[in-house]
Image (tube, rainbow, N blue to C red; front, side, top):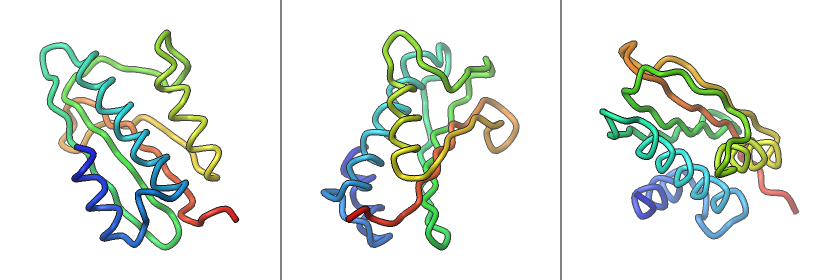
Length: 115
């Protein structure tokens, strides 16, 4: 998953070794691991990255219908995700997955490198 994410970032003009690229790689890793760990009967995940203007959107969707909250949990993974988003003038939210089954954790970053 990391190599695929690195390729997509590169295609979007974002170096995986940059601060933003590193944050995105960590966010994808944390969200995918959480989905696989907690999705129970449906551990498959779908990861999408999209750049629109200066906003990079990362979404990780699963088919588990159980709700979740973007808050600090025992493993701190989602807390780290929220902190990384804020560090890049972004945010995170949870929304219904495409197709109406499951959920998608969506994290947005301002795609501008800090000096």
